[in-house]
Each structure stands twice: as structure tokens, then as C-alpha cells.
Image (cartoon, rainbow, N blue to C red; front, side):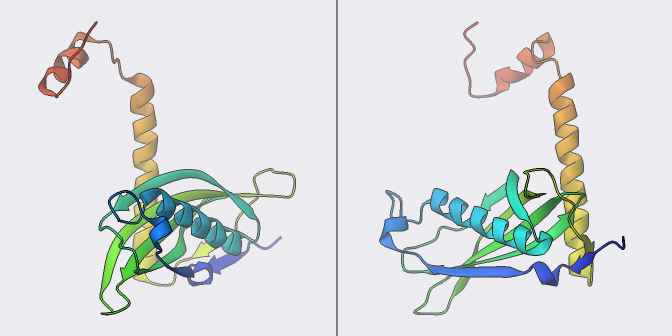
Length: 181
């Protein structure tokens, strides 16, 4: 069987939504949890569109809240597949908010979700290969490779690090903590 490849551009998806008072937190800004829910929805749509399968969220790798979103602003989320593995995809999402009266745009969030394609039985399903059509596609793909390597290194460190060693305990004294054991 000939492998299937799709372009990054074929995965592009965007949604826009007006932010309402019901989406705000106690300080009058749009609640981060509401934005996270929208991010998960667009990550699902992007991954499912690209893979042709039902997809599940494996991890939320990065969510950087850069600027607050105000009630009355129009939020646009743009997603694309930045990386593919065998059954997984890393979806990059950019969130912008627009003041609809002035037209002023601000970058509010950048996020990366790892999604996994599933077949009708709930088993992992192969995803198409990714065609990198420009330097921006290459940059995003390489950044995902770096992100995966850092995650693996962190997991190895977590397993091997001796948290009870005297040096580890001693190194904590410079932090704003009190140990009671």
C-alpha cells in the first residue's frame, strides 16, 4: 500500500467566537478554563480533519497565556498539525483576540496538544505522513522534535533522580519553603 501524505495546509482550521460575560472569571477577564475547553475542541477538529479518524487528547504539552482576553473581544483560534508520528500528531494553536470596535489584535495564547488517532474499535490508528511545504513548516516540525526530546529527558530524570539524597534536600533551602520532617 502506498503511504498517504498530506500538507500542513490541509490541516488548517480556525474558529472565532465572541467572548461573553458568561465566559468571564471573578476579575472580569475571560476564564482560562473556558479558553482551554475551546483549545481542546479545535485540537480535536484539526487532528480529526487531518487523520480522518476520531482523535483523543494524549497531552496538553504547552499552554502559554500571554495576554488577558476581555469580554466583548472576538477570539480567533488557528490550528495546524505541526508534527506527526505513527498515530500521534502535535497540534499547534495560536489564539488572537480582536477588539471589534478598534480592530486591534493581540496574541493571547500559544498551545500545543498531542492528539492520537483511534479506529472504530478504540485502537491507535496510523496517521498520514506530513508534507513540509515551506521553512515555517520545517521550523515547527523541528521544534516539535525538540519538545519530544525534552519530554523524554524529563521522564528519564524523573525516574532516576534521588529526591531523598542529602544534596537534593540541601538544595531546597534556597527556596521559599519550610520542611517539617
